[in-house]
Image (cartoon, rainbow, N blue to C red; front, side, top):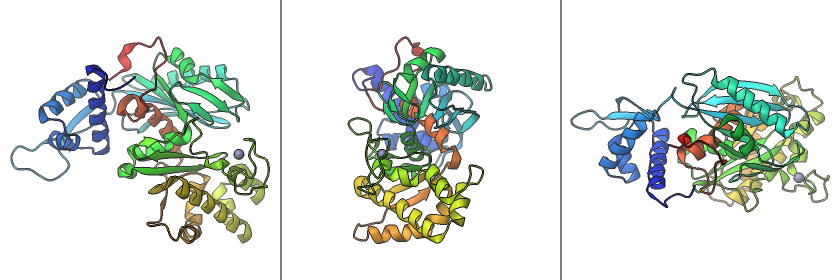
Length: 394
Ligand SMILES: [Zn+2]
């Protein structure tokens, strides 16, 4: 949908702007909202009125902010218990499905094993069944849409997974297939982009204009929020920091390159090198590793951060995956090395743990849907699958 072309899209754009401001400033008064957004108080009253009737926002007691003389103003927040966003987080061997409130709070979650090289059509059927089971658990059972966080290269406007080497998938029109099963719009993106968006939209980093989410798990990638939008690059590869070279003559990676960071920092590599099984938490393995190996891990994690800083120059890097769980063990050494390796850059980049911990994958998937369908932080050229009913729109 192109915005700004007619009255309907301008109205939708204003509603999304209002919702985004209320999400990020819960309890805001209409007057303050009018000052923030630059719309007249009459327009704000009109637009918030229709959002209230639609169950998108709710009123509460005293507004947040300084007291004003006269009648106390009523604060507005995002409504809960009215609409739900479906979320699908696809990992290498696991599929997680859930529902989130409009403010991103997770309300239902199911996890299931995913076999190696799963059949794409059967996987979509499974997602559909899991989401139908999830929506039966809430009242009202109102599914607004679905956000899917997948690994690999995703064509975001078309909701097609172009290449997902770990599943053996290419050109899978996941958005269209799942949309036909559930009859709601389905937004598909790379999962680390959803994680970056969740940190920017829902967490204390909401004022940050440049943010990178560095995920290191079985795979490794970064989602980058760059000056108010998600950074994708020309072919959807932007942020694939796991495939930046650390050893020019290193091992051959599945991507075709040599010496990729992911080869040395993936959870499988760390487990193999520390000699621990799946049953031992990886942070424990790192804590107990010989000091030479720990130093090597510190050095490689710092390398990822230095590369991210030099390429994207974020204000903050948020960590996810095993590096997030091991951050209390690694923080001091990594921060020291990072500041030594970026000595001449003003204001060293801040590196922090995720605000959502292990829940970031599913929250990120929900925010992929919420961002596009509710808050208007997706791309303008995203298009819903054909043959959808119209009621989904705000
Ligand atoms: Zn690679």
